[in-house]
Image 1 (cartoon, one colour):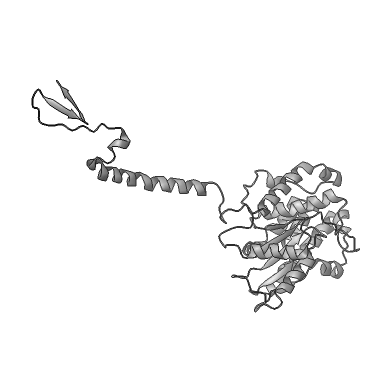
Image 2: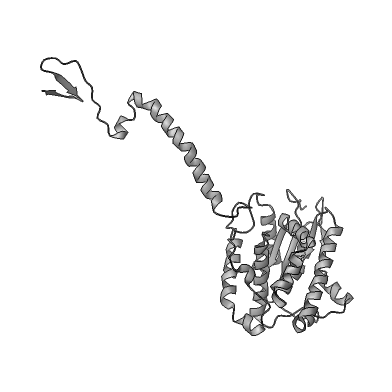
Length: 317
């Protein structure tokens, strides 16, 4: 029988298209099917929005205006689905961050900002920070056009979309766990989640990343040809994401290296008075003299030519 985590956290499975998200969501739901408390499901809202408002995947690449309108509709539908569940534990196929990432990639930074500046996003971001976020990596052999989903032009664009997800999560301060493309076994993907969900509450799922000064300036509303030429930056951030998944963690909430220097400073402040106190206690006893290079000289009353005894030898003046 599956047991609930020590503190049940909402689960978000996000990432680029065709990376096994829905399959993983179903597997996680099945894992908790006989638990005392089961997570409520939030199914992918995008397909319902496409049908209801007569959008197609082609609108994402053919019309920036319609692309942005579509992502706003998906964003609102996701936020509504989460709010309707209140304080109930849930597992979500995608998140409010997904339409933000797609708007960022296909329309531009300002388009994404229109959602990021909303109160709805602030609430969603807080929930994601308190939850468990799994990012399924692009590059699996599951990329299939089903006639509905948005298809990348080539593997490089697919990987660039994935990199956009990682970047937006980082910029928004949302910890996440990378589900590597090499981990295709479903049971191992579930095990990866379970290992992360039971980690200490004081440890983040990813290594803290110093934000790059120009990170927010990266603009993904580029032509396909220009995105293809940006491979170098993508590979660098992929390496960062992989490093985070290898267990390199820091204390959650540590924003800079000053946290660690403060510890050293505190140690020094306490050590100095303690050392001085020990000095004054032990110095009269002569215990420290051999370690300080001090000659142990014992003087006696002058007699027979002003005799001075010095550590086992006699000297006459």
